[in-house]
Image (cartoon, rainbow, N blue to C red; front, side, top):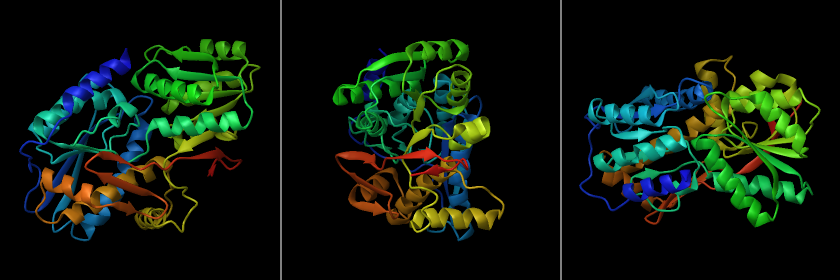
Length: 377
C-alpha cells in the first residue's frame, strides 16, 4: 500500500524538462535549502549531515565561493512530518527563492515534495533516502548521491546466508522509512531464499520496545536486521539486551554510529552496519583526508562523524558539479553538466550520472563496531 502510494507520486512527478529556472542564483550567491528532520529521534543524526555539508561550504566560501558566488544553505525542521516537509519546501522555493533543494531527509518526505520539485522545475540534489522507488524511474530533476537501500539490503542478507545464519528476524518502525527498508529486505530474502522467522514492528508515536523485545525473544533469532535509525535503533537493542535473547544485530547506513556509541557504549560492540561511504580510517582516500583536514582546521578537538562525513561528501560532489557548470548556472546547465561528466571520483567513492540514470553511487560495505566503539570495515 505504502509502496503503491510512492510509485503513484513518483509517476506524477517525473517527466521531461520544461523551461528551467535559475532563481536563487545571483551575482554573488547560490542559495540552497532543505526541509530536514532536525527534531525527534532522528534529529541529532540529521543535524550531523548539515554540519558536514556546512564544513565544506564554509571552506569553499572562505576561498571566494564557486565562480565568485557564496553558497548559502538554509535548513528548516519538519520533525519527520511529510506535510510539514511540503510546507517548508514551499517556503524555501516561493519565499526564500532557493536555487535547489539540497540534502533533504526522509523517504515519505521526499515523495511528498516531488510535486513541488516538478511544479517549480527545481533540482533536488542528494536526498537522504535510498528507496528504490525514486531510482527505478528517471526524474530529470533528482540527483541521488548515496547508494540505494536495495544494495544495502542485498549486501546484508547475502552476508547472513553465506555465514549459514538461517533464523533471521526483522525489526522496523511502522513508518515510511521502516516500511521501505522492510520491502527491500523482503526482495533480498526472496533472492537469497532466506525467509525471515519474524517481522517485529513498533508504532512510531507510541513505541513499545518491551513488547518488541519479548516478541524477539520468542522468535529466537540468530540475527536481527534492525530496519530503522536514530534512538529507535538503540532503544530496541537496549530492550532486547535486557532479555535472554542474544542475537547478532545488523543495520542500514541510516543508523547513526554517533547515536549508537552514545546510547549503547560498550554494548554496541559487534553490531554490523552497512556503510555507503568509505571508512574514516582510510586516510589515503582523498575525500576522507580532505574532510579530516578541514574538520581539524576548524576545531582540533572535533571528533569525526560518519553522518557528518556523508553530508560532507554530498556537499563535495555538489560543489564539483557547480564548478564544472561554470558561471552560467541554471537548472538546465547543471543537469547537462552532471549527465555529461562521466565518472566523478573522490578516491574509493565514485559516482556517475547519465541522461538515463541519476542514481549516483553504488558503494556499499559492511562494517562491525569494535571494542573502541569504532567501525571496522
